[in-house]
Image 1 (cartoon, helix red, strand yellow):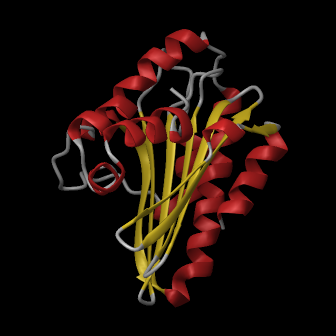
Image 2: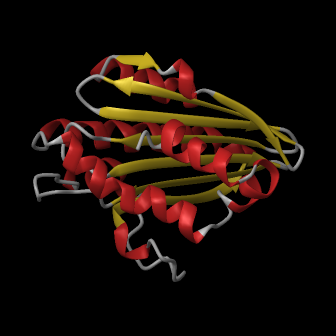
Image 3: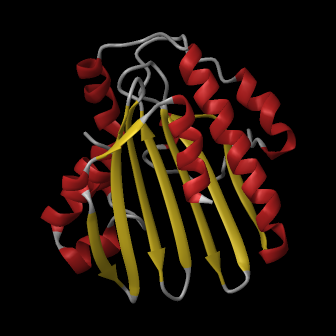
Length: 210
């Protein structure tokens, strides 16, 4: 599914690979591969896959050239179960980003109530988000939802105002640097296996392009 999502971005914003930001590593029996792209007119795109006892996919869009929020998509296939989380995080400089089209596109898949989990980044979450769990039979439906979520986000991003990349990078760093500072399930295992310097480079250069 990840390659289909990348193709969707490519049709709107031509992408060029950042070969110097590519990384491969192993954590807890999982083989990870991370890549980065520059998306013309949009900003930075980071992807990561993991293969092993489970399969994971991550897509991050950090839009430096238009005033849209950070986009994050995670998908896990494990033991016949499917988990999909799609979120946006506030890196906005103004109020030109309109998510109403995303709500309409997602319909019942959009989640609005409080997630019920107090996290340091909770105040940064931008509606709507996805939080879907199911089994292998739900995979095709989840694929469609993920595609709709990304398409609606990109349409909203294109309709938003352009912005100063330097200001946008500074604002978006609150989230990416917060991940490194506060730790969590996405950062702690990598730090333990690969060290703080590698983890910082992975997040700053590959995933978020900070």
